[in-house]
Amino acid sequence: MTGDLQQRRIAVIGGGLAGLTAAYRLVESGAAVVLFEGREGVGGRMVTDRLDGCSIDAGAQLFGSMYRGFLGLAREIGLEDHLVPATGRDALWRNGRAHEVVYGSVTSMIASGGLPLSTKMRLGAKYVPFLARHAEALDLHAPERAAAAGLDEETIAEWGEREIGKAFVSALVYPQLGAYYGSLPQETSAGLYHILARDAMDVSLYAVRGGAGVVSDRLASLVSAAGGEVRTASQVREVVLEPDRVRIATDGGAEQFDAAVSAVPAPALLDVAAELPHALREWAGAVRYRPALSLALLLDEPLGVRYFGLSFPQGETRFTAAICVQEAKQADLVPAGRGLLVAFPTPESTPGLIDADSRQVLERMLPEIARAFPGVEDRVTRARVYRWPLGSPVFVPGYLRHLAAVRGDQLLGDAPFALAGDYLYGPSVEGAVHSGALAADRLLRRYA
Image (cartoon, rainbow, N blue to C red; front, side, top):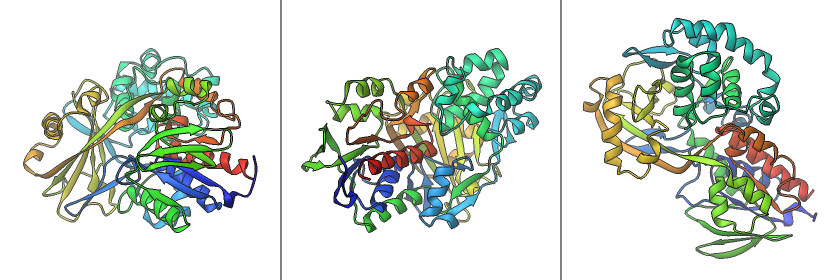
């Protein structure tokens, strides 16, 4: 079916970054867009909370220069002056202290005291050349290429222990995956990690002045300004696909749309869309997630360190994977003379913490935070816990190959429907933005 896009009413289910990107692209092209978001506000994990004069980036933190789609979108919507270059200094905990490093950068790790000498020698002699040889297959925007190159058949723990050594997995791979992607080396595709490592070899980092949620809020305001609707606290209860339309039911009733974009996690889509095409339902049923959580601590004074993120090797802590020092972003998040930490739990502990009382989360994580920053428990003025029960997709071995099946129209055919979300490309804001833009393109082509 084709026709004038301006006569088409399109629903976007989910107000995270993927849904906001899709809605923005569609409404800019003239579609009548209604975005449904079950939470009180938009952004998903790309959200900034305001508490006692501080701006808390509860989820997304820093953004790499390889995130072309995200950075381009931020500039397009007038936020170029909000992109603040970050120092790129992080730290890795080893032998009872923090070792500074440009975290994620293999070359920086080689020069750091964060790894044993033997591991650093293997990184330089084996891993850097390996990443160079496979550069064409390690594409953040086409991760299925890594599967085609045979890099998706085992976990990064299996590959890393065999090729580099156990310290590579525990001290380099685990902190990066555990803290920022919510997954374990023992379950994550080697191909995905190789993609992340290659991109980190030459990367600049950016923070968002005023908080990462500024991007989400700007997109939502632009959708509304262009005539679209952004309905928060509006939980979609049912999605019914028909040949030429989509029916969306919420607590407020049912509505008909010409087309829809699903920008919610795959399990959430399966919960509300009982009559998806069989092939799509089977494909989406294979997507795995782990919950995400963060703990924010407001302090009565800054910590005085120059690095931003401190990560712990596997086995060093039980509950805390990483601690992010928010004032080190230099992004106007914390008033002068005060401090702010955001800590992320280990992937192993997150399922048990997600439903725990906030006080229990604090009691379990704070002693480990105090190991790195002695006396910090006496400087805490407020604490807040943030939760995402469907947090991060887990890219298990074989998942990059699984992604190849969703490219093109193999699973959706002629349905007036499109998928968006970081589970389609990579567990990052770039995966969300890229998938949201492509979902909008699919529907725009339909009505061209």
